[in-house]
Amino acid sequence: MTHRVSLLIIAFVWVPVGCKPPERDRCLVQGTARMNGQSLGGFQISLYSESVGGGGGEVNPDGTFRIFGPMQEGEYTVYFVISEDTKGAAREKLQAMGVPMKYRRAETSDYKVTLAPGPNHFDIDLKP
Image (cartoon, rainbow, N blue to C red):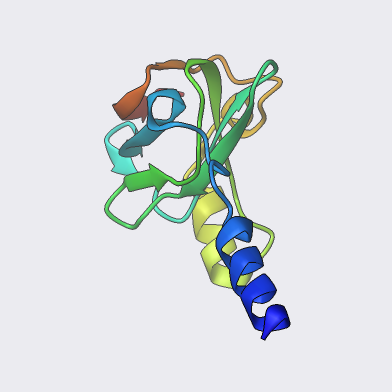
């Protein structure tokens, strides 16, 4: 009986409390990604900050994206990559879209966004 009570107490105490950042410290990011008005569906969008890291997500066929996970406020560099899992004709199609190489790496992209706590919406339209 003592073991059951101990296990029950441990189960209630062990529940992870406070593992995620407080809501006030989280930035939710969504929007659209296009180049010259054409959807960048199939690309991966990434946001990177030297000071706080970053996050990313897939651009949907209609150009919409949503970045999941806790993001902190601050300035981020936006860049787009083709997933290593994208093969064959799908990869060729994305490469043929002609996204300039400067937007394909965090070190060379000059597209910046600033995240504020709470919801953030960005309509990104890259220009060659």
